[in-house]
Figure 1 (cartoon, rainbow, N blue to C red):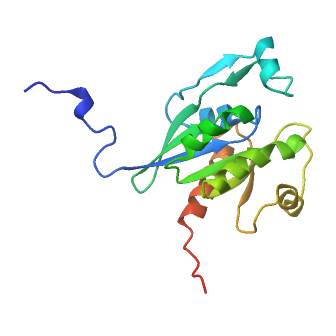
Figure 2: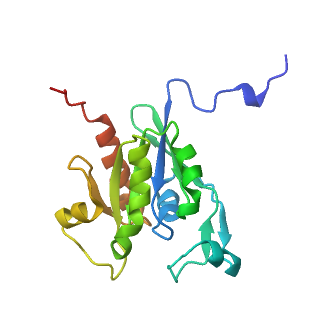
Length: 195
């Protein structure tokens, strides 16, 4: 009998996989986040921004020359035999239907927020709430961006009191891990009984 490499399971015996989606507006750091936290070389589907795209998207981040056109993908192994598959969603509103598909089967979502453009995070939060997927708000720190008290951020984003908020730098592993840890802790939080 000839061995078929495709018939072997990808994960070692006893390992379980979990799907997490990283969302947020264009230019908020999703690709950087996946790149920083992934233990494998991440899959990136970036293309150069063109003038033709300006007709379709209103993109106001002057320092970007590329954009994610499908998704970013990375993987992180956690203790307890859990492998997290990270899917970075594109940030333009026209990809909302694709993001809805990406959320199918997701255990949780991480919404990256830029305090210079808080209102641009509403769509990502709405997609997660519509899909009934637990999520964490991760404020990505940018040089010169305003710093707000958590209560002000919660109010600006209309967050329910049970949604965690963390601050991180999406470019650096140790900082980026705080978002993933907060999300996993939120997902594992015991269900509160309904009275």
